Length: 186
Image (tube, rainbow, N blue to C red; front, side, top):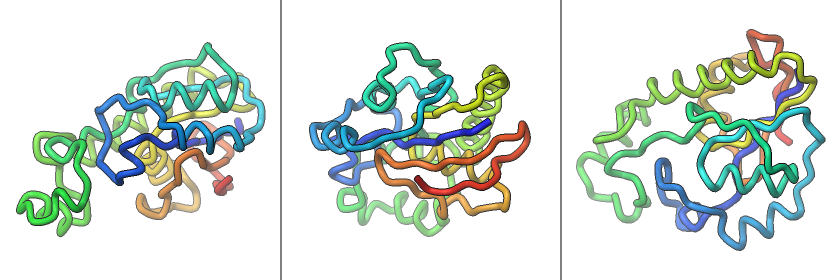
């Protein structure tokens, strides 16, 4: 199956470089305008995170009102960092400890990175199993979700932070039921 992993369009939080995970922000005007220039191949199915920024992106890119929603594909819960950016968090001792860990520690009052990655991998495999008869499936999700899925399933292996994806952009790969091969940026 051909799989497209597409990051949602820009939100106000993205423009301000904020940690936006559980906050259900819609696309901003700039994000909508940028998506109007994007073209992705037709797919047999579209899977989305339940967050507005993802469902709105899916509708704009694929013209679909019917999509499969997978709660496990939502973004990480950034805990106390939610809604803040680097400038606001700079000087916060908990933020510095998290930065010094290379992002490996759990977010204070939020989600642990390994739990987040495991949840995303489970959601991806559940949806691909459900859609196993499809030839092409688009996943309209979050940057962290894409990074988690590629880190877990891409062959050759890739590092989580090597898979950062700009808003409205994505990756294409072949899914064989166990691995994503030939992953390339779109």
